[in-house]
Length: 308
Image (cartoon, rainbow, N blue to C red; front, side, top):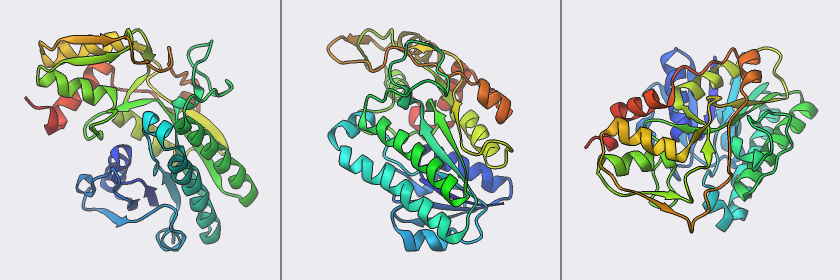
């Protein structure tokens, strides 16, 4: 098959692109390199630097493409609070630009990388796709808006669509910015250096951590699975883990002597988050294969940044 992946040089995009290329597919990648690294891509991926709002470039890249994976997005929740206009321009505007270009060229399927963040605080766990979203950040709002645009435009223009609400993905190569880094690579980096690990709030807040290879498996399945047009599907491990438990696992797999500090002055985000993955199991034949402890070990082994 012929694929276009937007955001191809990012964390999830590069893992997806490399797997598809290794399987013999023709893979084109588009990324503006605001956070991505083209060096992470397999030589078999045909990479183009560019903006997802560049319609003429999209028209060229979409020729003879069977399926588009739309991963290009700004992804920092705290940053989105400061720059909501930019998040709307990229995450929403870029999605609409892509859908228009797909209509013009005649591409018939798109898989959108959405986020479990759109659920916000919910009274019922695990989180099922039918629950009313309660987004708490401009980032979450932008991903929810992208879902609606993809499904609505797809219905109007005859494009098959599926939105995957990806929960807390982690693994080797995850971007580690100096401000507001994702929790797993931050904890691992601090642990291998025996540095202090700072936990927001009391650490009792829970998340659903899923290893990158499992996310990619779900995304690959979504490109050809029948009967999923218009669906929103959770992609998580289906296991709830507190941040305190994550710290204990990180210290265990690294053998670290790091001190752990709980900063009660910083909000820890939503109190609970765990994915109901029954729909993914049914529609994508999805079954997470890598538990959190094994995933942390694999991340340490495969990412040179975490070698002491």
